[in-house]
Length: 172
Image (cartoon, rainbow, N blue to C red):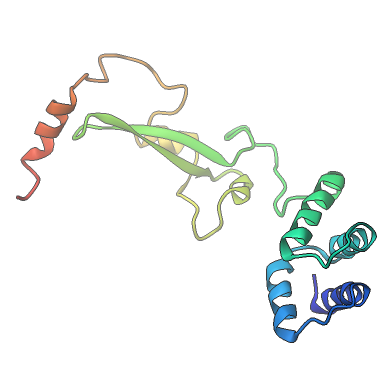
């Protein structure tokens, strides 16, 4: 929502409830509510004026936004639409694991699918994990789901044995 629309709607609200709002209060309201689209904000203000007896709090307006979202689900889209992908089934994520010989257990990992851009719905460019395909992961020796339950490949060790196996490496 742009500042002009916000200021206009907030002025309407303040006039209706005969309340003066300082510039600092306007700045706080804007900072906390700027994520709300202008069309939704105007509708929320109209609903508050029609139904509320007191000047709303920031939380009241946020609750109004949740109501607006529920009423307008068909109009809301994600920033990145999901596309069909046989590699990741449209999730953008590839789950895999490897067996750590040192600690004797499987370590689960997740990669971003490099064949589609559905991973953008989950991760940002800065925080996404490595990009890969299933073939690359298998080539590197990772195991893909459904995971095999081969008892020979999973040695059974007690907690004491596991602690003893790494105790020599702890510098005391």
